[in-house]
Amino acid sequence: LAAPALAWGTPRTTAGTATPAKLPYTAGEIAGRLGVSMTIYVKERLGARHVAAVREAGISRVELAMIPESFDLQDRAQVKDVLAECRRQQVAIVSVHGNLQRRYDDPDETRRRAAAAGLLDEIRFAEEAGAGILVAHFGTNDPAYRTVTELLEKTRDLRLRLTVENMRGGLGPYAAFVDQIGSPRFGLTVDIGHLRDHDGINPMIKADRAGTVLAEGGSRIWHVHLHDSFHLKTKPDHRAPLHPDGLVRWREVFAALKAIDYRGVFLFEDGRGENPAEWLHLAATFPRNFASHYTP
Image (tube, rainbow, N blue to C red; front, side, top):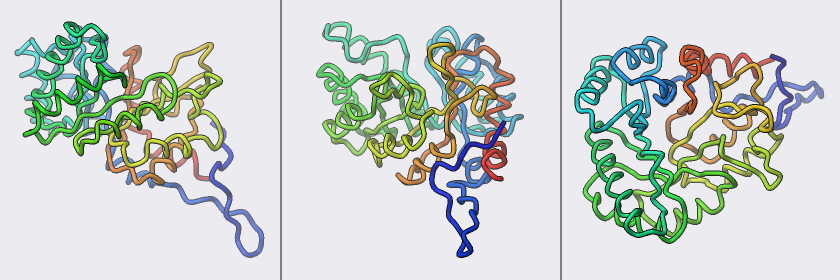
């Protein structure tokens, strides 16, 4: 891959010779906060061997996604198997993603309450599993407000923090929703693949946009889903990071995270499960590949 142009300026020596801008994070700093979503195995029934594979790749932080076809909270044997292997392998469950099929912002009150009840079970599981973050597609409308405030009240004795994940568009409505909720236990998860500018293009593939976009979320951003993106009219996003065909400007993304003093895990998420081995390898080797890619 050809090294991209420096997007955050090129400091110069007194003699006028360009010198490389310092990377926002070293490979070691990224590796020390590296995590991966177990959605890399979304097409398989999650088990101990998958946890072992993640640990063998050198990753010790994971997010569990409540996708019944892959990880079913009602399957107690499966849950026990996965949690036991996480303990054995010393893999931390840093976050849990709520069921993707529920509508927590459903205007039908009966359906909304049912969705919230299902998520409450997942919140309690996340707390027991030791996760610090619960991610959900809450939405931002009035029914979503009722869901979030009810869940925060019902879980007020837990340490777990809840987050709303952005969907298609910008971060503005989600930042405003976090402020509207106004709870120290409610923040924002930013999925960089869901972001869109008014022209329909992901701003993370444009020069000088990452900083402006992530600044809109600022200190509300407690968790991230990172992955690569292609030309959206021909190929989807949620692909392995630093993929040969990827377009995300990773230097700018990490500089933007640094600028807002992001304190969370650098968590890579795959939502397709098409090539788990390749995905896991590229996620695990991202720290050193990032450093070498952006160092002349």
